Length: 322
Image (cartoon, rainbow, N blue to C red; front, side, top):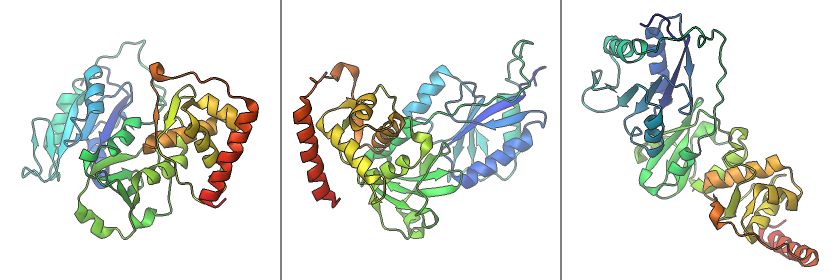
């Protein structure tokens, strides 16, 4: 180990089931000296020290892009490979029967590889890492080639998505829990897993919109300056948000607009409009408009605008039974 080891190691785990993630955390914690703390970080951590990732995810565009400018040791995790319990060519094959090979790998790739810290760089105070929302995770869910995947977070399995059919099944104990946070991740699944799910399938895009709309962590997937184009209407539940959601959707239906413009014309808080647009983007119900495609619309006549709003809202009331 280097003479001045880091006091905190930033380690990210991507694409594993909750059970495997918990088991690996325990093994790694046992291997790392007690004098060093572990920050179980997000992939976006700027000072990442180690990435542990499922082999099915390691070639993902976002992963390769991050590794291209932030090279770190990568421990790949394989399942059902026929080499159970072995660590071959930086790939650990589950399940783990002994940790001696893993311990040797961590010692060689992580602990021995730590750079020697200068006196000015040593910081004994705990560092708080800001975790940013991962928009690419939602983009992957709209790829029909992804197939069947499980959505997991720190509380367990959220549900199963069929990206080809754009359907989603919530697991039984999460059917009424519609919030997610930064621990959300994906892992592969099969139709066999649906045997343990007893809920009816729902539209994947509408589930994503409803879930992100009720999840504060993802309220800033877009910035207030971004222009957004509505592709399809969300279907809000019959609650107190319904009128606001339809009003914001109605304005975006007329033309692509920035978050600032929607807030100004609907008289709603900027943060609420930003969260609404972020939910639309995550669900694939809207898209951001490149700057070169933004058309500056002429200011509409106030009288005609008012009449247009009344007519549009009247149609909405009839359509949605308001």
